[in-house]
Amino acid sequence: MRCPILVAAWFGLAGLAACNPVYNWREIRTDGTDLVALLPCQPDRGARVVPLAGRSVELQMTGCASGGATFAVARADVPGEQAAATLAQWRAVTLGNVQAADAAALAPFLPAGAMPLPGSVRASAAGRRPDGGAALQVHAAWFARGTPAGVQVFQAVIYVEGAKALPEGVADAFFAGLKFP
Image (cartoon, rainbow, N blue to C red):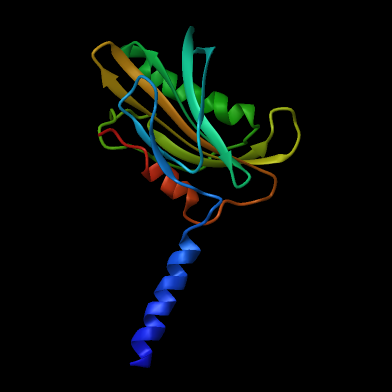
């Protein structure tokens, strides 16, 4: 009789430990897309025009900060023939901005419903803040989805400042939460 009570108490404590108030995960839909993302905090939204693949594009961004990290999902609409080049340039610019020498753990990344492009990858890299300041860890993925009007290209990214590491499973939860219903 005592053993089942101890087992139930153990699983109860383990469940409470998994409920980390720093990461209050919620599903959000990114503006103007079918993409559903999992963010650990209440997001803010914004937009800005940037040069990508030889043209000015408007980036729509959704993101928040929690546990010493910034989580963001951005997207831009591009013509279909520019999708692969845009993903490659976006990755190079992102990693270049943080002075990352090389991306470690560069691996294919293809959420269900995304286009199978060679630039659809997930990367982790160490670098520095763009102002040359503190150390920075970057976890990012780039992918695309076709639409009747062209292609939407996406970047999902986590920036962690300083020598602090994300708790195990946080980056995987964020990237696994990216999906097209």
